[in-house]
Length: 159
Length: 159
DNA sequence: TCAGTTTTTGTAATCATTATTAAATGATAA
DNA sequence: TTATCATTTAATAATGATTACAAAAACTGA
Image (cartoon, rainbow over all chains, first blue to last red; front, side, top):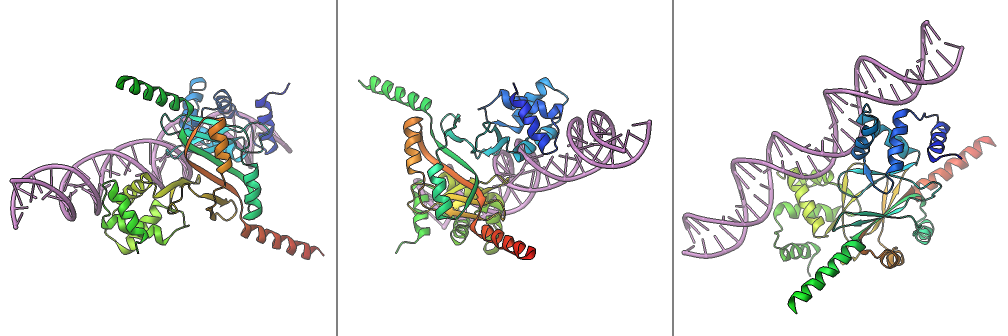
């Protein structure tokens, strides 16, 4: 049974890149922290725990390489740092994000919600889509719950 | 007839901010360069042409203020700089972008393409949407044309 | 083994953005 | 009008993320 890291290794080899120990350590951190939207610095610190000799520049270079090969996607939520997400294996498209403006949580939507929209863009705007970024900013279900219960509390105090 | 800048002035006043000469100069640059996706530095240089005494920090502060009031939207195409777009007057939503990976051109789509998608997100993910960012990366119609004619040229050479 | 290429490290440099501080401006009320 | 207080600005220093660089290390293939 071929593991995910094996397939990434092959992917690198197919472009005549090697999976060096440093690159492997970086990829492993990404695999172990999916859905966490790590910044380069985050990745660096996590990699350092197991491979203390790694350099920050190497992590940056590796992430850049992985992004180039579409193994990870680089995203930016407007907070001044780039974040790196593993792309789902075989996924034709990049997943979407829900950023909570209350608590800062970032949730992912793996479903492809843009099929119809992309058809419209390709046809009506004559634009050949290669990739996309879709992020919603709003209130996550957790914070909504909290707000509800706070309102109830207030109502109770007034009664 | 009330002008757009008058309405922006009112908008600022309603939040007890003033439209200082520096702020007005900045807004005017944005109005005169709609669809240009200017970076803070771009705005600074343009403002400086007419108001050489303005400081860079002032431009940054003004853009931040305008973003807070939803007069402009701050976007990031992943190239390390934030860009600032005037929001269409009365527009409930922020327009979408088409970024060409060949020539770097950025086109805008003012139509709201996400109505249905947003319903799905609100219902299925129980997320209260306040704003969104949608960007497509691909090949613009101009570069597609160019590629077509290049191919024809090649075909001609081989005949 | 040797020569050549790739990769890494550690650090310096860069670049966008933010913080700071003193001066300027503007509004307010006596 | 003038003293006072808050807001805004300019100039520049500081910060923080990212990139560039140069020397060392690791690998590759003959």
